[in-house]
Image (cartoon, rainbow, N blue to C red; front, side, top):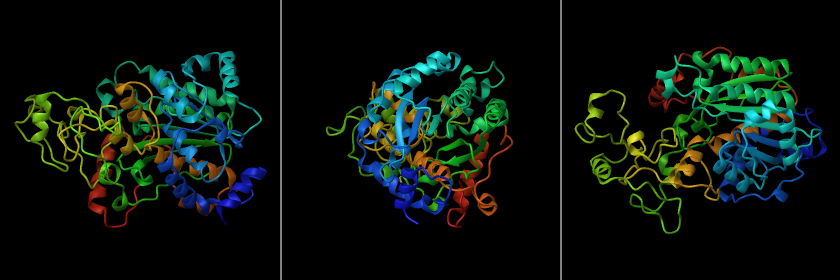
Length: 442
């Protein structure tokens, strides 16, 4: 069995008759290589491919980029548009995917079916063609950093999960995928997920969810995220392919970049520029040991020595480990372990993008704040390649056998904990202890 057979299956529309799962590693590897040569897409490059893709809460388009990488191997996906309430994010998506600019509030679309129909008409949606919907609702309402606010009134952003479920129920795609922080599947927020899942089940979907480390998909970053996938048929969940000892590192991602001073751009790369730190900040960074060093006691703001929980503040990344989770704060060494392993500055936008696995050719719209935010909020494209590979192969393949279901990652059917952040800490400790024991952690 080879990739050509997969293309014939797509072209003929003869889905569900063969088991193509043996091709997952090949498709994923080939698609991941394509990202190195990425340049903004034009509509004519993929228009007419059999499966429509609509991306809600699209951000810059990290998830869609994973699906786009598949097109370099098999002609599968036709990108209709990305919808985002943030103007700069919507512009980044439209520019890189050659789609109409859709700067809209998804709540308005969900509440007014005429508005939703108008949106679908604008992007060229064809109800008779197979469709996949992406919906990575903003995660700020779920993040563990908001634990002290968990007893306050519910964050309105959390309801967007159910708004997305309403849109899925209206469009009725063949499959949908949601990404969020691990806390999405915790006790505190389980009711939001459970409510949405009940609607999906009522609408005829099989829904499965799990928590993954993006590093196991080749992203040079420890980034744990929940993934929810729904299909109208039985399917297998994605599975990471790297052992902890094989994870890509900070050196792999940014080791070849030219050194730059704080606030000074690389003459050949405008994105390779960090924040222009205060002199006092740089003096602190100069005293932090290279390659994973921590801020020494007595250096920097005195309040950091009086309060527990700030051990990573002003800390440097390790060269030969994956980075910590990249957020929109990655420019600021005072926000965590976001200092370059050797240079006395926070991460440049280029470094943050590469650690998120964005290719050089991807163009971000907006000012510096917009760019760091889009990078930090994105689904890492290499992680998305694994998700897209799994969804495509599962859609085209015959029903999995009982043996395949038993051997595949299991769905999380009850809340993981009050806060998954503590579970993540335990996983990281076990990884350090077991890194040479061949233990695979998703």
